[in-house]
Amino acid sequence: MTAGERVSRGWMIACTLAVVVAAVYFLIPVAWLVIASTKSTGDLFSTPGFAFAGFHLWDNLRELSSYDDGIFWRWSLNSIIYSVFGSALTTFVCAITGYALAIYRFRGRKVLLAAVLASMLVPGTVIAQPTYVLLVEMGLNNTYAGLLLPALVYSFGVLLCYIYAQASIPLELVEAARIDGAGEFRIFASMGLRLMRTGLVTVLLFAFLGSWNSYLLPLLVLTDQELMPLTVGLTGWNQSAISIPGLQILTVVGSLISIIPIAIVFISLQRFWRSGLTTGSLRS
Amino acid sequence: MASVTAVRGSRRKRMSPAGSRLVPYVFVAPFVVLFIVFLIAPIGVAIANSLFSQQAAGLGFGGVERVFVGLDNYVRALQDHEFVVGFGRVLLYGVVQIPVMMIVAAALALLFDTGLVRGSRFFQFAVFLPYAVPGVIAALLWGFLYQPSVSPLVGGLSALGIDADFLAPGMVLWSIANVATWSTVGINMIILFAALQGVPREMYEAARIDGAGELRIALSIKIPMIAPAVLLTTLSSIIGTLQLFNEPQVLKSITSNIPSDYTPNMAVYAASTLDRNPNLASAMAVVLGLATLVVSVVVLRLTRRRNGVSDGV
Image 1 (cartoon, helix red, strand yellow):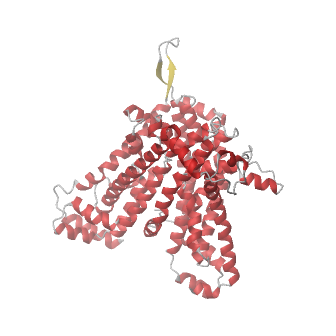
Image 2: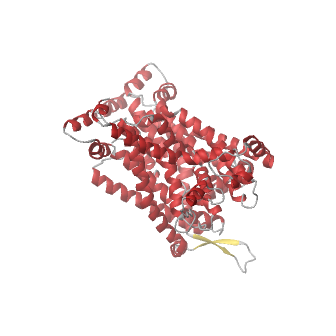
Image 3: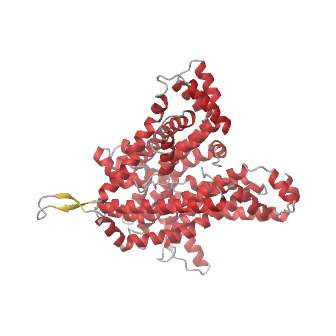
């Protein structure tokens, strides 16, 4: 690296130090969470935050699994259902829409593109309340569909897919496939999707994270405990912890568990969605 | 770009007319239908609802009826002291939190881009990890770190002789800002870093030959080169700030210093659930939506003019 030759050792140390300070800030809460999860309720309040006390992680997990007939695992399953189905469907809808916008010239295309762009400025939580009203009218409140369907409108995903399709699918190739007699949907499914792959992983992961994090809409739409995702369930526990002290440690352990899968998914797939961000780095 | 358009133009003429003309419409249909049902319709519902009011019929025995009240709900919303104060609060919050978050994210992205940091893979992981923590879980987590009964931070600071109260009336807004900053620096850093990696390295070499230092290169070349990415991340932060809800809503349960209408979005939620007044809630939601739109457009206009960025996306 040429930069290394010219820049003094002092700079290197300063840079690394700055990053170390930042890393401490970002890791401290997670470190506390891991340590706190191993404590009993008593130790949580009586021992220093960053010191290990008696090891009660397994007891805590057992308690977490049995509390309220294991409702925690039901919430986890719900979060997985909302996120996996939701993000897969969302990605498909975004892909086929973005592909069509990039490959075809049709009447209304410009209007649709403008609508997609404009809708990104509409704050999602602002339409949550009217969406709830609408879902009640359709009888979809307190159903899986009531939470899954609104999440499918992901304008940013459509825009990303449009950019990826434009960048990665040569129209000559589409033309060649047509001459070979392939149908339009077949071309999209076997060629388009494959060429847009990196972009789609990016959209998939952001949609997944969006559903996993979703809070306001499920809070409004769901009253049935059995249908709640982890976010709503755990914050509910946190509120009740004021009157039910044992819930405090369950909220802590539950939070730790809710972070683990998403952290693994996101970080292990990092290089895919990261290269996706670079390809469509949204440069004008 | 011109050549692509030319290819497209010629293709269009050669395309078989029957059937295939419908194909693009079939492809976009699912999105368009969902877009209308779950985006356009809710906006329509909100506007319509905001113009009506539920009033007890007769002497209160006949249930409720829907009465057209024009802009009454808007007048009520704008006269609602807390609702208006909430706007001021999130604006103050945004003016401080967004620059701090962007400067930290940009500084980290630039640091990683220099290639001078040892073990940068681990450090990038550390910075990014909070983004994988759901927003409300992050708030729960920091909530524990703010509560004097369990917090190692409060304990540690008091051992140093500092009496910290993260949940004090004047402090709690910045404690919320800290949660949001902690959660979002990672993703913004990654986006800016990805953009930086796309800048041709020869530009830096040329600047070095001209005698520019690393700091000068960062400020005069790198930042301007990634202006569109900076704009995009700033804009999404602004939209996020105006709809601030998750963090204060979660922290509300551990302190009495966050009332249920602390932010505009919380006021909408409170009006809809606690006050059971969906009509007033709709009017508030419309006001909030319009405010977001206005701020976003103003920011886009201003930055566009200054940076000469022709098209953000």
